[in-house]
Image (cartoon, rainbow, N blue to C red; front, side):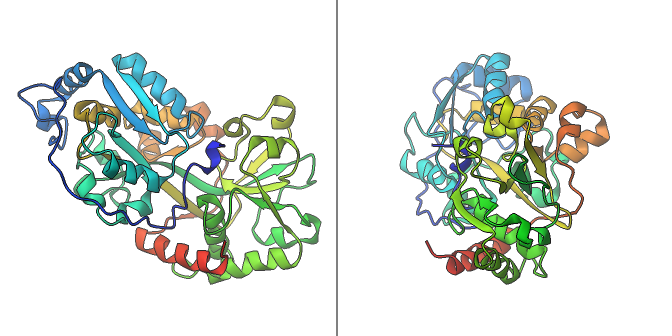
Length: 376
């Protein structure tokens, strides 16, 4: 399965029944500190104490992290190299809903995920708070207030904007506006990653279109009408562009997807194809989307889980995401501090518009309306 479809729609909230159990503590963890309850490194005795306890645990369990998704392969390799901790990566193509289910179903087992990386709307899932453990990384102040839960039970990690990926061997001009997609020159050219109402990128493409067709974060009907128009005028192409092979076969002339997933690098396209693949963040209102991190309340390796988060939100971890084409949540702070990896920063698609980021409530309502308009 392609990594491009590992996430269920971020605009649909999974309902997960969960019960609260006892807080597990690894037998290898320090006897004097219960890291499963530590809400910060300082609360556990300091960062050095956290590193020592995490190394004693020896292992970290992660889930739903494909190596090419936001550069996670390099994140894992760098963490292992720096701390000597084994990373067990399970079910890389699982969805956000499946990650939450794993916390509930595997509770108390040594294989339970220590950490999760999910779509933000899933933080509103039934029982979510009972499954996670609040924690604030040392760089907490560099995460915008709107991008984190006040108590630390979740915090945004990386994201991007909905973009147009163009196969320049098929289209002569890569469109730079949503309105341009309605042009007769793009007959049969406009494609999506997955199905509207089911896959995140496809559903959010409709949301983004709404913002640029007279709609708003609270009104997605113009976006629904926009895609219905693309279907009726023949510009929409129903090919599911969920595989690099489909792109290489020139079946995805214009692919609407998140910009950090729409790059030739993320798709792993060969040089002869990559040289003709162009990514544009369209003008107008940019639809932004971010994933979130959370630590399992019953993490079998609670210290390693917290050290992993510290690593991801360090300058090194944030720059690794950036090098993968994703926009790390601390990017504005890093640019200001001069700690950003400039080559990777300059390589990001230019975002000419104003970023619009929906709340969990807005995304949930929009997802329901879009799914209803485009039934499976």
